[in-house]
Amino acid sequence: MKHREQLSKIRQRINQLSQERVTLETKLMRIGYLNPGALYWRYIECRKRGCQCQKDKKYRHGPYPYLTYVEEGRIKVRYVGKEELSIVEEGASRYVVFWRNMARIREINKLILKYLEGIRDIRIEEEKLRRKAINGNKKRDKRKSG
Image (cartoon, rainbow, N blue to C red; front, top):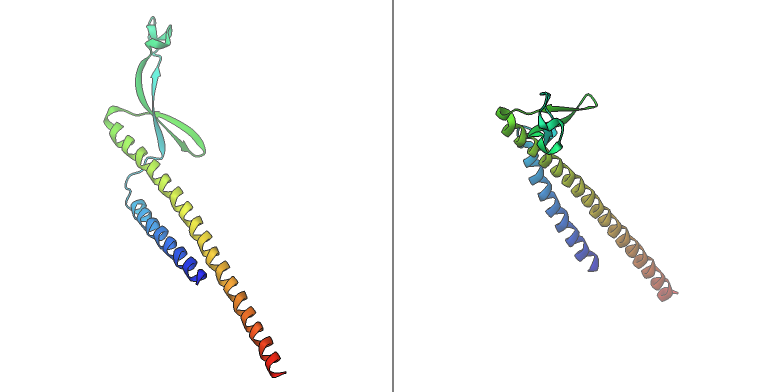
């Protein structure tokens, strides 16, 4: 009976994880525009002669938005203008969510595999007990007949 309870709990947990995975997969399939990069804000030093920003960092201009991303194996940085800032922010935010969901799906897959291995181990143990019981019955039968 112990094995049946264990198997039931494992099956329930696998079902819960599978449902969570389906939910995450659905979100990933519907995520929309992605911007594969990170948005950050930076203060800059201008090139005007005599500007205070060249003498003291606290007078630098900004902050201005920049996007970092990888292209052809190299890290690129580009300025993001006001007209595209909201779109870039939204895309970058979705990109983070996308990868967090992907990481969770990988965790779920590992857990499901672990639980399935647990089922395998329980079934192997059940088979060992079954064989032991059969062999025990054969020995008893021989003693009774002999």
